[in-house]
Length: 419
Image (tube, rainbow, N blue to C red; front, side, top):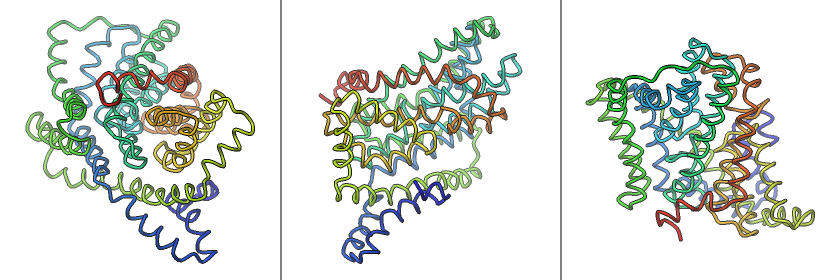
């Protein structure tokens, strides 16, 4: 935390805090082992899914797929009171199945829908708040890069994690649409006439090809036809076929830039992941999770209070640190600790992922608020004024995720990926 406060890159802060004690004590053997673990931390086949899904998302974005998905969203919910706000939320849910990233959702939707909503008569701050809030669903609805990194790092099957995020992700999107409907009535947002049947079916026809991508990916993973890593390669192939041959909006000369952009996006994350493996090993070696749990138990032995304290801690951390980085730093501490009080590994994963996401939306430091302000050219203060109802809603859902395990476990059990 000191290193991050001083402005060090995350991997440097992790490396110094991990290696410094052993250099100072001269434990050469431990340093050698840690060097081996540095490589072993990223020498994992399933981590190939991260750059593949990032590349697929970038190809789909450049190919203009977002416009097709927004057309589908507009056909279904554009006629409701506050229609463009509803399109914003449904668009995030659809795009989440392609990008798997909250920041990618925010940038893609914010740059398009915030100006469109302002032109249609919406308060620009409200447009930014809806965009930021709906982007929370990105890492929850599968496929999710956050879940891929979590699964690869902490030994949880990625397909099972995808299944666990399905119900919470849909619940977030639907509840936000209901809340937005009532806000739109109060603030008298515009309402448009439903589009004709011809235009409706035409929009659906144009959008059905990109919408099939997450269906193919998740269907293949859940049915056992292919793994999450193989699904990521299929996603890239599918995106290339759509961009080059179906819509013809992608050109071969753009591929180099897309590959370079995807590599830059992934390189930092993979480097952090490598150093986080050593960080987790050191914490485990010195029994830090057990020490922290003992300290917490000395204050309270109630699992409910322990979970509330953990959620509060994650919420605060989420204000300042990105979700992936926070998971890699805190996972080695919190996962064993929560397992010791009897929580299932899937339940623990969703608690950590969800609670950190709520922090991203909370003033005054929420990462998604600043991203939306930049992407949509909105003043930060205007977004902050409109975002509290969505933060309260997410806190309620966060408590359900934390204290109702079946909310997370139902769908994985239903499709048979866990017992």
